[in-house]
Length: 329
Image (cartoon, rainbow, N blue to C red; front, side, top):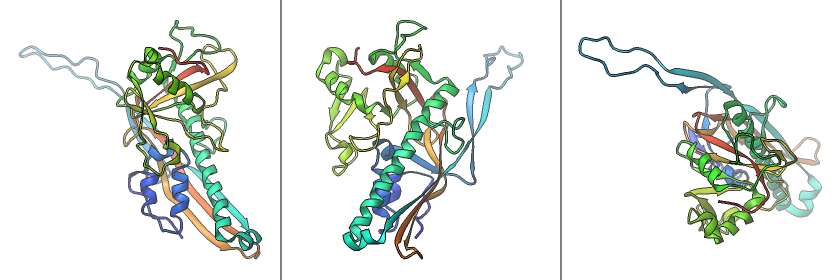
């Protein structure tokens, strides 16, 4: 069975509504594997390469003119760029004896775990992917921030920063937000969620810029069942709730000023068409091959040709060098 083609820009959750009923639970499991996955839109492309343009400089000599004087002339600078898609292929084999003993429900548990792990694979590369060290994956936000210069040091004590990082400074987070065009979300370390909740209770730190409210992802979304946190009106995403999956933003980074590997980063993003979004050459496909010729293995195959594109120079910003300490103003 082959899933239908995605419309040009659509989240995985929206896509899941149109797939055949027999694969819909698996697509939904993938979509709900992460709160980031739930809101990240994907755009279908023709061919294996996405060709785009970014405005990197505006015309410098435009001016008013006097009567009978010549007009000014000159163009800005537009930079062409390309993004490729990368293959994710995975088989989820289940021994026939397990199905004989536990029924289709037992196989469904194996498939559910496989889809959750595929979600972890994508979201991990969404943040940490580095094509220079692994040419089978796309560049994630951390690598793109370094390439495009879209990074701020969490420390505001000077250009040199603080070795070993520092407590999250909301003033630096404000600056990161200010440097993103029409931001939509903040992606923060799961390990800091309790720090955010504490800061909400202490209005001397956050004023009223940070709040906790009901979920925007639906009543059945376990990842947001306790409500969501916003800062400056932007929902804060965490990657994963407490599961077997590791956090997508662990405190294992080195601060921009050096020191011990004890820091994490926060990302401010502008998700959407012509901003930060996923790309795919082929629609996500799930095939149930049933019982294979060996007579002992049921197999489900997952296939996706996918990548990431930052269409606008100001569609994201990394705030680096954050220690696991109480948040400061």
